[in-house]
Amino acid sequence: MAILITGGAGYIGSHTCVELLNAGYEIIVLDNLVNSKIHTLDRIKEITGRNFRFYKTDLLNKAEIQSIFLENDIEAVIHFAGLKAVGESVEIPLRYYHNNITGTLNLCEVMNEFDVHNMVFSSSATVYGLQEQVPLFEELPLQATNPYGRTKLMIEEILRDVYVSNKNWSIALLRYFNPVGAHPSGRIGEDPNGIPNNLVPYITQVAVGKLPELKVFGNDYNTHDGTGIRDYIHVVDLAAGHVKALEKVMSSSGVIAYNLGTGTGYSVLEMIEAFKEVTGQAIPYQIIERRPGDIGISYADPSKAKKELNWEAQKGLYEMCSDSWRWQMNNPSGYDVEVKEQENLSVTPL
Figure 1: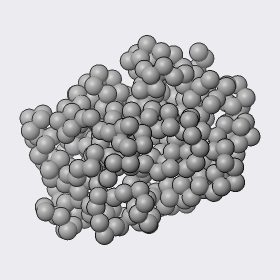
Figure 2 (figure 1 turned 90 degrees about the horizontal axis):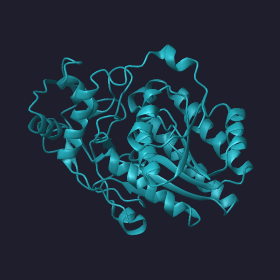
Figure 3 (figure 1 turned 120 degrees about the vertical axis):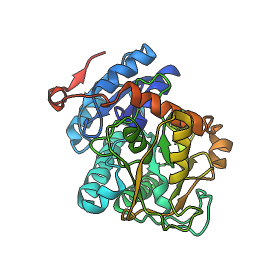
Figure 4 (figure 1 turned 45 degrees about the vertical axis):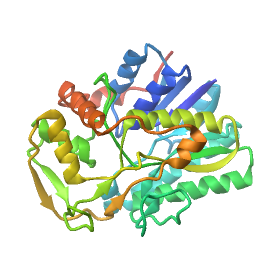
C-alpha cells in the first residue's frame, strides 16, 4: 500500500518524499507543477535510489483524483498541495480560497469514497495570527490575519468536522513555522518562481548575484532590532516530522495539531548576519515598508510534538545557512526547467 503525497514535487513535499522513501514507504506523487518543477522528481529518485509513480494533475479536478485512487492502493495521504504566498493571497484572495479549500474538499470526498481516512495536513503557524504571547502553543485561540492563513485555518476546521461525522478519520495538523535549508546533497531545495516570497532563498539569490539586494519588509516592529522574528526550521527536520506524524495517524484516530518548529526565534537582520558568517558572502539590503498581513514575532513551543510524536528539530542555524548556500551554488538558476517541458506530462509509470 502507498502514501499519496499531494504537492510532492514542491519544496517541503520533495524533502518529505526523500524521508519516506528512505524509511521504506511506497509513495505516489500528485502535483500540478504550478509552484514546482518536474526535475525535482528525478533528483528524489537519484538521492534515494527508489522509483515511484507521478501524476501531473490538480486537486480541483475531482475525476482525476478518483482515477488515482482507482489505479492505486492508497492507505494514507500527506496533503501539501496549495497556494502559499501571504502577500499574493492579500492581492488575489478569491483564487486562494477557491484553490486551497475546494481542492481539499475534493480530496476528502474522494478519500471518503475509497475508505481512506488517514491524513497528514500541511497547515501553518499563520493560523495563530496576532498573539499576545510567545512561544505559540497548539491550544491558543486561532485568528489568522491574511487570506493564506485563513485558508489553512478553515481547512483545519473542515477536517475537525469531517472527523466528527466519521470517527474513522485520523488526521495530524502540522503547523509549520519557517522552513529553510535544503537537502545536504545540494540536489533538491527551494526554487521559487520569480522573486522569492521567503527570506532565505531571497538572501541566497542576492548572495549568488541573481538579485541585486535583499528587501527587508519593515524595521518598526516591536522587536530588539525592529525587524520581524521567526522560528526557522531546517526542511529536512520538517520532513522527518511528517514521517513521525504519518506513523501517528496510521495507529490512532482523531484530529490533533502539532507545531513543527525549533522554539527559537531569529530576526531578519540576525539571519542576514548568520548567513554572512557561514558563507563569507556580503548581503546588501534595503529596508522597505511592511508587507500586508505580516506579523512581528512568531516562534513555536514544539514540546507537544516531542512528547507525542517523538520528534524534535536536530539541525541548527549553521546547517540551515550552509545547506541553503550549497543548494544555491550548485543550482544558481534553480532547476532551470522550461515550462514547455512540463506541459505534456501526465503519468510516469513505475
